[in-house]
Length: 180
Length: 284
Picture: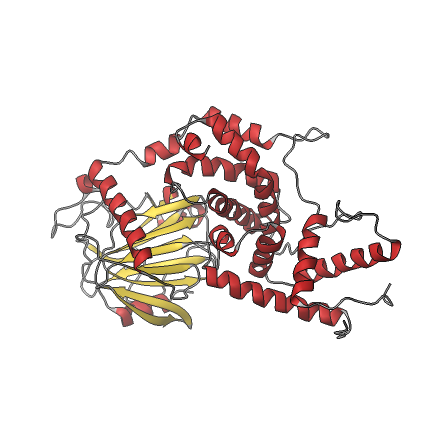
């Protein structure tokens, strides 16, 4: 499909867009939560199409595409709202695969999500991006490195540092308790 | 709720919590939506078909064979250099890759417009270097998409020419003409070249392909980490705000490279590292 798209087959490229549009939108939303993710993703897909002749055949397409998406989203973040912070929202209902949680566990799960989201909001932008890429988008370390344009070693160290910061924030939120 | 027992935050618990959070986040959707939102893929296809397939890329790759061959050769060198081993030197957004020297110092990539060696270019300094569109210094802030800092070094004075290149991510280049006290670089008539391009920490990806005979010396510019590159020619690749940029212009002198916030600077001069650092430090 990628070869066909590179050869100028617009229908093939449309298929690629459909295949990757969800992860592209999520990436744009992670990088620039206050910007319009759909606009950023749309422009990124246009730029990616123009850049197809420079795509290295045989290389992973997804991280290459996501790098363009992330760049596009960052440009919009710069121009739209430099202090946006984290504007991710979680649904009240929780994950769709929750199987009839008890009222108590539903409350705990909801509270946990709230704590995590608040803690994420205290991270630096570059740490949030790595956490988002690894745990929200499910990218591998190598894919994260490619998508965020940073060395693989930086992904590893930045992830560890971000998790540490999250633990500190969550620990403070819990009143310093480390029970369990 | 505050009385509820809290879970501990071991590595595994934290990672599980984050993965679970991903499922609960209200992500934007691609449509078409019940509310009438656009179908992203269809919109993208429509825009591509309206613009014509690959129009920008075809223009970019319709270079003369010699120029195209040179870029291909650089790409091969890039791959070879990656195999030879990469060394990240830690400048934000900058990755230096050591590899074999280019086959030969490349000629100007604008051969038909390049002056003969030893013969200063006609017109504004740097006019033959393919630096983009020349703009008046007073219009620079309006034409560039980021604030452009100028060196305040009194011995240097104001640049003699300024250029903006939208095909290289809005790269801005300032050129000072050679004169007593500001010797020629490898480009006759050009005494100093200062290039600025956007690249925030962790944002952009710059790769220099440099020869084994290129010397890289860590220095400091106003306390910031910087590198002084001297010796063999090098090339520059980076991801600019509009995508991947091949800055295939050959260098015209030894280069000082540093970053200030989202902007990365390259100063090329024959004045040496110490003087280059002085000039760079004079920038606000």
